[in-house]
Amino acid sequence: MVGLKVTYLKYFFFILLMSLFVYCSNYEEFKPLTLKNGKYSTEKASEKLNKNIQKVLNYYNVDWKSENGKILIPKNISEELIWNYTNKAKDSVWLKEHLK
Image 1 (cartoon, rainbow, N blue to C red):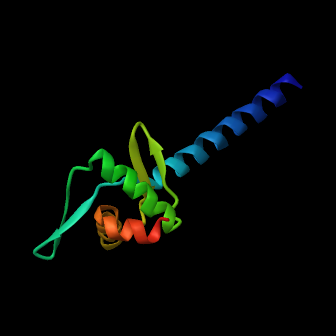
Image 2 (cartoon, one colour; image 1 turned 90 degrees about the horizontal axis):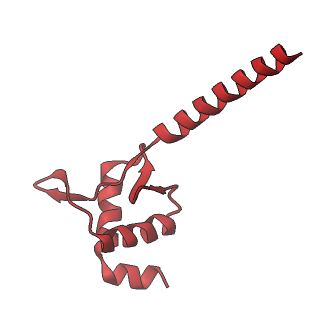
């Protein structure tokens, strides 16, 4: 009976670890993008930009999370969309009009 419980516990922890791995591996750090000469490049995010990007992501119902002060977003978001979110987070007029 004890051996059976140990086996179930092993399976439970294995499934738990695999679920955690899949959950965590579907996210990447948000890196603000700029568009120059038709090419995307990353820029350093300020604290203000990080606060604003959280508001933009919430507005668009993007599933994001924060770990160790970094914003994590789903890996399947395109560069164009990240660039768009970055621009909105920098645009005080857009923020005032959409986040009342």
